Image (cartoon, rainbow, N blue to C red; front, side, top):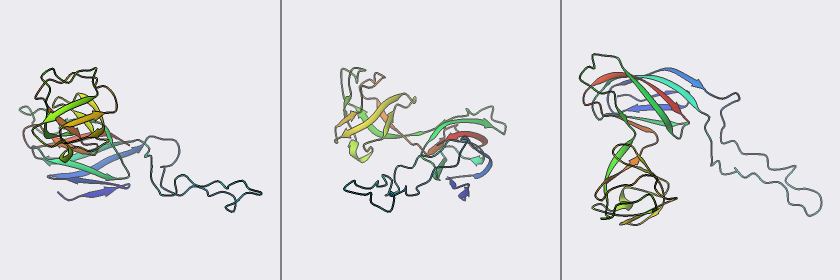
Length: 209
């Protein structure tokens, strides 16, 4: 269960061991960083023209170049998680290959968590709507603005613009109708969960940005 760091990415499994087999950068230049941009020529220009000022002076807004990563996760127990951190912001895609005798298991990796927040709308949350009424659990304890909402099946419902305890407003109309009492899930950009139903070793191929 020890975390490892390779090329500025840290891999933290809740169970089992991780070994990075390949980390292939998918860009022609160099990795972008948080280096402060030029402040202008000596800070001022002749006359009354204001000198150019860096718009990234706080080090925010870093964009990570895509990388193709192949890693072996040995002895991953059911419901174990693998968390990535460091120079990354999202696991865009994951494919997996079981290595052992997995005839009784399904190779499933989940990238969302249950919240207990349910749709509270007898007419359902329709594709013409961007505001969902919810109940059972206070939505503000499970979600924040900017979170992506999915269903258990992984359907993308939208990105949260704002919310209260009983209402969630998306940045646009939801593309998928969601029935009353459907539980909402929160996408976890940097966490994978083994939901195969048992312990297995697996090779993961991940597209990470």
